[in-house]
Image (cartoon, rainbow, N blue to C red; front, top):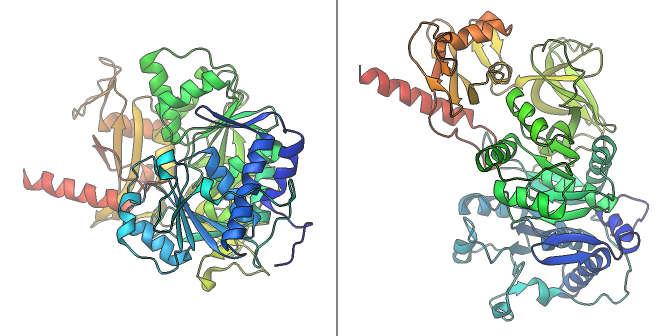
Length: 551
């Protein structure tokens, strides 16, 4: 395709990095530190080698690897030559990985070689007709000659014929990266993200979170997920410093924060919980006052976790984002540690106001989208995906470009979006609609609850009844006694106490769970940390059947 330099391209960050950040450290990966000039040279040399090797505009290159500086170089080099990067989840099974690759038909596959992932070691036994080359991302000397169409990054790099020549190329359809959905209801689908969508998402994060060239950003989230990817691109655009860790571990993350004076990172609830737990148990961390910006996504933080996070990271602004892969990450942002918020919590979870480039509206059965009405959340704007890979029926029509998020919510008079729940997780009980997320958000306010999942199970009278599976904090115990034991032991919890807690916190009567089950194991989750409610429902029904058969 002809080059159009007035159009968006994620490699437009290279010019800034090679000049403004020329001699400044841009990436840190273990003992390997690269300046802006060195990083840009790595991207250009790799792109030159890819062109020499025969990679063309529109070709797909799949990547499955842990976070590293080379992962960033590969993302930019692939798109620099007009090819498409397909980011695969290294936690997938071999079957899932093969399904994704059969969908996008990559000509090249990039994997780690230092880490034993779920499927990389077994991949050689399977053939993929489209695949010509397998590349090991980061190698030791013993891999200098591998044979069998297995290459290395260093083998591919060639000096660029025109030093610092940023002659990047676009694909004919504008696709830059294919990210895969987590697949809560089936196999993952490849979401085609354009250069424009990735750049406006980066600009939104820069504007709202306030990323600057002075930031030192710790990569806690996988680059294969849209949240980690979009935040990485935002930091590349402003010229911040990237501290890479292969994958998240609380101890390693906190060491990196202290050693490299990290100022910003992103979390999901599990990451924040692990960090707080490690700090609480070890009590060895120094002051973390250098951290200034934390962005949480992938689910709401409990009130207790927000309180602990703001105590530990006392100088950091704590933000929350609501988004989706199809929307190139964040649709809305809000500040969580705002001390001026004293009003009583309304029904649902407030996820903040729309990002500067995002349009939102509520679709109701009567097509009325006035503020306050509850309905499906729709979004429109340049952040939207082009469509799902290989699925023409799910390309978003250019004329309307309204995308159904699958979430239920409302927009208040101040423009805040309130998330009520997922359409597919909705419980129909006694003719009323109940959204599990709303019940969960209320119950997570209880200091004794560390985790909760709400589902509906069949009921002859109500059609479905609400069941809450409860995970307790370590210092709390469960009792089956119906008497209120709170006066005798503040660390004791029962079904009756939880019922009273729900009513005290203004949860409507028909939404209060009819059954509370103490859950002593992990909830079934997708590889990206989303709850598998159908699988949990099956486990609950099995548990209840076993319980009744033993009586």
